[in-house]
Length: 99
Image 1 (cartoon, helix red, strand yellow):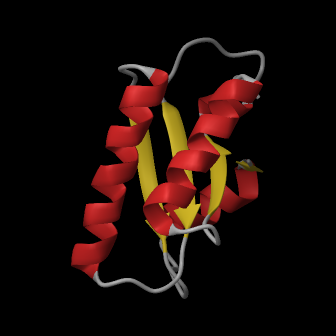
Image 2 (cartoon, one colour):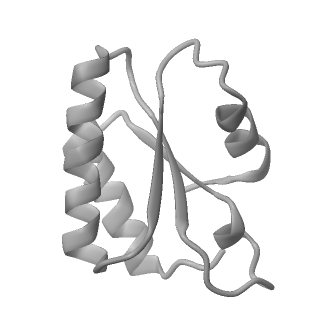
């Protein structure tokens, strides 16, 4: 995994502040592979059921916190709510790592 311990802590803290302490975070994509270089940070956040508006507000809040804590980076943030059957969610769980 190509994230430092400090980066992982900042990501987890940002998720908890944005979505609540029960939120779980997964890293997926190229950052999971130690042999690769560069790449954006692909994150999936599992959360309780939220309205579309609430989910969007919390996603924007988390992205803002991450930018202030990690600096300007390309971060892709996928929000998973109960029953989410999108292919990106399945891929994140199959290939990613829980932080």
